[in-house]
Amino acid sequence: MIAMSNDDELEEIRKRRLAEIQRQQAQQPSDMQAAYQQEQARAEMEAQKQSILRQILTPEARERLTTLKMSRPALGEQLELQLISLAQSGRLQSQIDDEQLKTLLMRMQPKKRKTSITRV
Image (cartoon, rainbow, N blue to C red; front, side, top):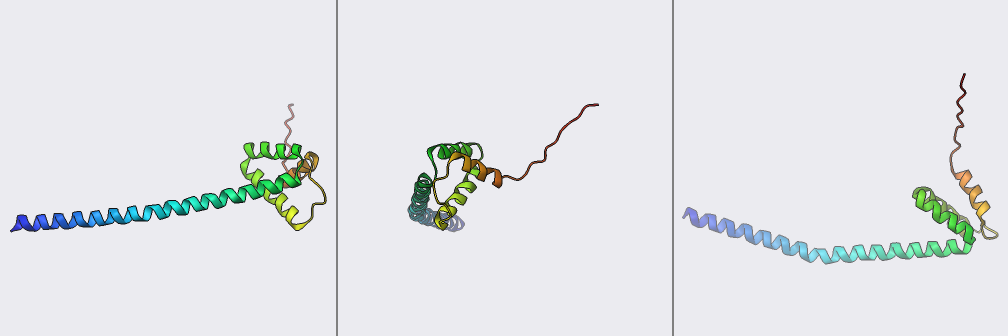
């Protein structure tokens, strides 16, 4: 009788575990689909950003921005967002060239203290 109840308990545990696994497998495709949709939305936003940047930057300025994003991704992203907001607000009269982009970068970066060492 004790052996029978252990078998019943074991069978009940197996059934619960099987139901849990089936529930997880049923949920997994919807999670994958949501992740795919998020990735698609992110890619579309990135394409829109690049399109706007192509319109407002000269090729040299775009090259500088790309180089900046490789070396300092956070600063590059911040600069992109600032440029896009300037363009969308209508505050840009013409394309931004490399020199203007350098000026914007200088304004964005905090002032550095210049230290000099003098030997006696």
